[in-house]
Length: 218
Length: 102
Image (cartoon, rainbow over all chains, first blue to last red; front, top):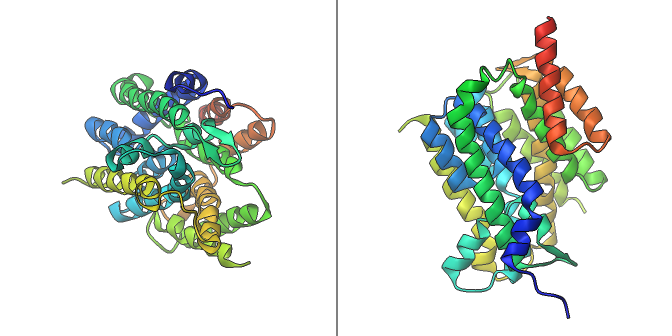
């Protein structure tokens, strides 16, 4: 019989992750403002989407002069992984439909990993506690970045524009588990660079997503 | 409505739908293997594209500037298993120092 976990356990275990996510929230607040998002829009973005990499991607596309559509498509495609991730936690999320929908919003890479009991089973209370702690840190961080961003000065002077690729590289390394994933990464990078001179900003990233059709090959 | 607000609302709605779809509709049934294989490769392909586009492009031009130095240092830090925060801070610091020096 496995000891049962509480939401408090989840929140406590998530503290180091929440600190990191909070700092990213600050960075996102600063970068979103630099990209032309207003203060309120940046905060509402974090409160409603709660998907760091997709939000960074959307801000990155807008910042690079891309179209609204390209920013949306890039963000949605980056979030596509939450479809299978959502399915993986579905057995743990019993309850009524509105409750399942709400609890599912607290799933991010970090809370998902933390609530994994092993063997593909997930703990709903750990997920809830960890997800809530990380969510609050993300929104609070974004708010701090938006409000205090002026104190930091221009993001370029702090090298914050170099934080984007470094962040994505770190996330990328965590997503590559086999040769096929590595191949998709290399091809995705090549396709994007080939498209850059010929199409509007943002679309090279969308073009790179077609590389995932490699997954159809047995 | 301004562009950023359209992005915020559209991405917000899409994210709620994407995250909620599995728990709401499918009751824990798993993806067909072929579909799972495709979706599983989306993250590496897209993240790699985001790395190079954010590091090596400016508008429609391929460029090599301080961001490339930051990315190189980030790669070393990741290989050394540095914490995520350190990786990002090292990249930013490197780029800032390169800009100061040039």
